[in-house]
Image (cartoon, rainbow, N blue to C red):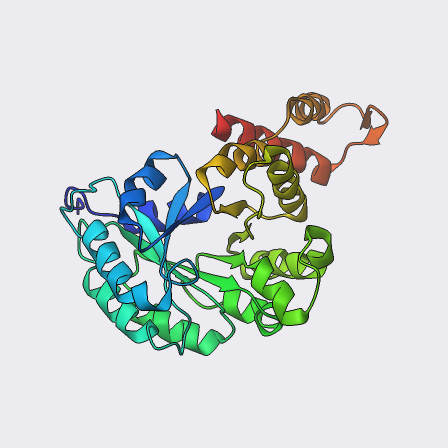
Length: 291
């Protein structure tokens, strides 16, 4: 059956969220920024009802989000995840109820990002209430969340995990620098792979003006096995995209490996076997996708 005009099919929603390399936050109480966030060209937009919104502004933010994502709304190109407030918070039930009621054909709601995710059972209860076409992204921000990452990733219908490094560092009383959180990052990548879901989204860089440092942080995430990175400003998008795209040197290497497949035992002194050729093919597929 053909989907109604303007509706979001299950594949269009979950695939878009699973494939996004960049995910741009926009505060829920700043509706004048919603269209600008869409126009910035991020893989997915996340409207934030949690940390970016003051407690006394949350009700107004929810109303603004519902208006922007409503079927037939003036912001017709608006498609976004919504980061709701945490499970157990005073706002959570009202937000989920209102957003699910608004998830009709033509709505711009892509799904939910759930912050402070720790409890797989509670996450499963939420998933059971959601239409199948909506994505679900648990945001891991605590030691308990990291320890339970495999269980969270294996909740049926979870699209991918995301990492909240700032809150995680606070929780374990660690320095928030990238390399002090190596173990947590590795755990989320391993959990996602073990659960056979999309590679996770890394925590946003706190740098905005320094594109080089944003790119370094994104490159580190890519080398860990993350599939993308959360962003807090449109200025970060190009640096993140560039860091996740194969370099010319990687593409050249991959082509040389594929050219030698089934023939020479080594290329530039490196042994060529199946894992190496498979990595080369993956690089070339990614290069074609980024064109």
